[in-house]
Amino acid sequence: MKKHQSAALKILKDTLSFQTSKRSLAVSAACIGLGLGLSAHANAYHEDNLTPQTSDQAQMNTKPTLTTLTNYQENAPYMFSSGLPDASHLSLLKEKGVTHVVDLIPGDRTSEISTTSELGLDYFNVPVDWEGPTLANFLNYAAFMQTVDIKKDKVLTHCKLNWRGAAFTYLYRINVLGENEQAAQKDLMAIWHPNPTWFAFMNEVIAHYNEVNGKEVAMSFEAAAPENH
Image (cartoon, rainbow, N blue to C red; front, side, top):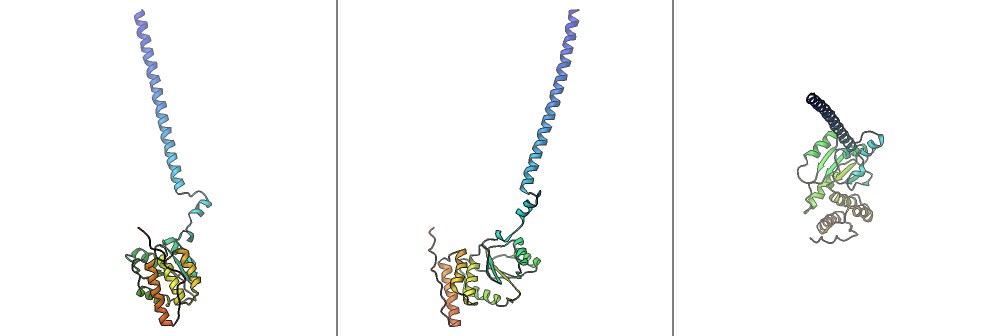
């Protein structure tokens, strides 16, 4: 009799143990599922934060503006200059009335040619070697600028950082437009101080126009000290 009772008790214990194990596994599975769900929700929340689209303020913060265009300047009513613009910048400039883009960067310019074409902007490239700008480069630039109808057209002159651009717009303003050198120099210096290579190039351009126009225009600054490497 006791032997049968012991066997029955063992079977009961085994049954209870099995049921407890099943409940533990179910709870564990539920916890794992909950954990995965929370993890997925957290990842989704993180991705939403990377590309916020939940409020007008967030959309305003991501809207392209010209404040993100490197060294952007309005040098004259029809002359703008800047560093390298992207498609959104060019679109905004078109809204401001820009009709022509002068690109001073050498090399393959296929991408920008395509972008300006799609936007209906006139594109002109003057490839200026950073280490060796030439008088011919500037005369090419000036010849193009003089074809622009300043009463209805606007021009963006750009390079990578607007260092070339600032020098070219400065030279055009004082040599072709006859603007005050110190006024043009303020815009130039707000962007960069020309190094000896560019100072010599700019002097060459000014000397050429002085001879042609019979004037004595001169730069009101010296070259920046050479960098020590």
